[in-house]
Image 1 (tube, rainbow over the protein chains, first blue to last red):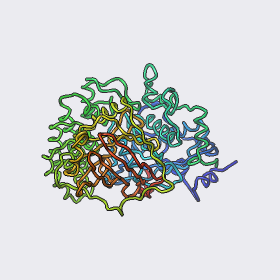
Image 2 (tube, chains in turn purple, cyan; image 1 turned 60 degrees about the vertical axis):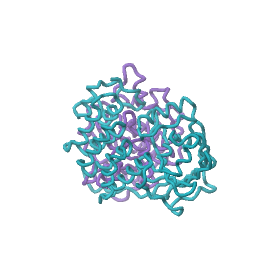
Image 3 (cartoon, rainbow over the protein chains, first blue to last red; image 1 turned 135 degrees about the vertical axis):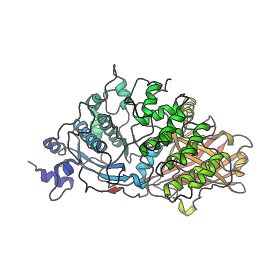
Image 4 (cartoon, rainbow over the protein chains, first blue to last red; image 1 turned 45 degrees about the vertical axis):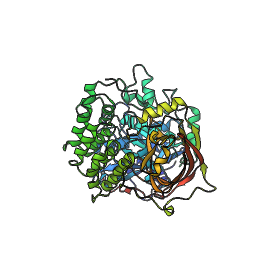
Amino acid sequence: MTSIRQLGACLGFSGAFSIVRHFFGYASPPPWPDAPLQSHLPRSLSLLNQAKRIQQPYFNLNLVRVGTDDEDLLTPWDEQNVDCAVQLARNVYAHIGVGIGRVDRWWYIPRSANTGYDVIDDDCEADELIDAYDLPDNGIKVFFVTAWYSDDVVGRTDGDEDGSVVLLQKENFVGTGRTLAHELGHMFGLGHENDNRYNLMCQGGTARKAFDPVLPADQAIPTTTHFYDWQGEDVRDDDEWVRGAC
Amino acid sequence: MSPGPRGPEATWFSPPTRAEIRAAVQGRGEILPRAVAFALLAESDDPKRETLLSAVVENGREPSQQRSTAAIALGHIPTAESEQLLSQALRSVPPEVVPYVLGSLGRVGTPAALDLIDSETRSRIGAVAAAARFTGALIAHRFGLPGHDLKVPSAKKLLPEPSDDGRPVEVAQASPADSQAILASLAREPYGVDLFPGPLTQLRCGTDLHTICLNRAFVGAGAVQSIIERKALLALVALQSREGYGHSVAYVVLSDPSGGDDVHLLAPRCSGRPALAGSARVIDDEILFSLRSIDRPGARAFALDGTVQRGRVKMTTATMSPTRRAAPAPAHSDRRKL
């Protein structure tokens, strides 16, 4: 049986490490006190589940929080939203036998840097943000932003599949998690599947609107996060981001 | 009021009423996220849309992020009232909001706003000064005014044409229906120019689809020659949304006479960040152009050569590098415990 220490070493942690901050990669564990009242939000973490998940093919994440304050942090609910989104994405990808391994969520772009990226104006600016920063190539690059001037867009993966930008939806943590999982699907080369409202790669609004009555936001996971078998195979076979089992 | 069709990523579904949108804009409603309400209000026919948005921009008790987003929304309303309210805001908003106000003035502003904008070019805050320079240039090019020149990079500052490893950029022509949809999308993104309705040339890079939309003022016999005499906003390049409906402006193509039959070309991103530069030559009613990527962190080398004649863009070279220039990493710190 593989020990947590051995699994930690597989993810690159040497010496003592924290289960929540390093092994899971979260700032704080669930339940997240500032989360909205939504069903299907994680209430606890299972070390056993996470250990099993990285003993399957897995990928890593490098997360950048955009528009942090003088303490290098977003608001408490935004910070919790980041962690919650990753845990929800972990649950979604577990269904196809793919884990999310090491998560480095401590990259940040401070508001004081006046980059102009703390409010995303449009898709073009999201692309600029993705291009403007390099991160270690050991994980998928995802930027979390807190404002996006749009009435219909909450995430974007650029045309080169260099990285993704995800809006932290303050009142809809499930939506943030679903958007993260969906954009990660694009990073694995998956396109839209708007004819299947249950599929992760159906666009979020289209999927929910296809139910009568409209699917409540907090039901979006797990109802609209299924995969076709071939999509699961495509993700597991991805040779850019997915690694072998620990 | 009935807002337009909503995109696939919309998180609300029944059309909100005018009262609900107003309430959300004022931070009172719980139905709509505020940024969504700003966008819906800007697109609506609400007679008070400018003043409602301006009230957020001017409100010192509002977080800067909300003020900035409301300023962006004002830049989507091409009215004299918007310009006046944005100009007024320039005198009162804090420095972190100023670049957003300037960005919006660049879209809807007229030469009347230039003095105010010019005063911001002297700001000690780099982001403010840069935004002011771009805003001034955008207005000057749109109205063909002297001055307000953007720095044209030398050939040494351009990335060389991708060599053997270059990937072709797929070139196609938009269908009439697509062309109509693209121009309808751009109508919601005012830049004060009337766009030529087609045929529209499209460039596909990966999953990104860009469409070149020419300024109608420089299409047609005689009109082309005018670009060797005056600055011009020659074209907008639209990017198709992947997760929403429609298209938004990704690049603004600016031209500046450089002597004889030649012009400098600059194609910054819509934010004003540098992207492509090059030159063009006017021969009779035809423009021969050449654009290359400006060398900067994160840039990908593009080589785009072609011609423009009678409103039709034809590409003779369209290649891109498979890799990008290195870019800096963001800051990193995990020392803080929440």
